[in-house]
Amino acid sequence: MKRAIVPGTFDPITAGHVDVIKRASLIFDDVVVAVAASVKKNPLFDQETRVRLCKEATAEFANVRVISFDGLLVDLARDYDAHAVVKGLRAITDFEYEFQMTALNYELNRNLETFFIMSPPKYMYLSSSIVREMASMGGSLTGFVPACVEKELRAHFSEAYALAEKHGSTNIK
Image (cartoon, rainbow, N blue to C red; front, top):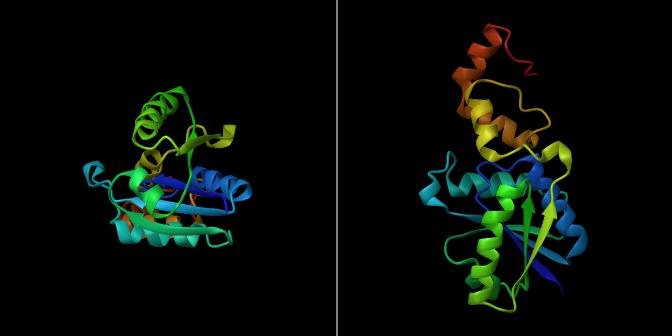
């Protein structure tokens, strides 16, 4: 069985993340989406919420499961008997960081391969931080995040959405 890990903070999971996970699920027999604690990033949502949203967003993919983790990716790969890591790339800046992480992981586990999936143009600009910023200002998130994430962000930033709707500065449904 070919098992891959798709790691990330997923704060929140975006349509770009879902695209990478879907494409990985077409290549690998089993895909483990690993939601990192990433406490140094000071995530908007706690890890439990991020795991729940990832599960909801990927529920249609039969060979995808979502877990939480805190620790080294190489240890997680060993624990799950995964031989591949899948990462999405949007721009050259992503590549520089991911190239360094891949080199480090290779030094720690020479049997762990990294596969990069290039983002389609419609997601090249999309990031969780951009989504959070848009949501904090009451902007429309349609097409940028799964419906479950939009609902969670709207609840979190309910005052911003109410103000945006009052002033007609958003096209939220």
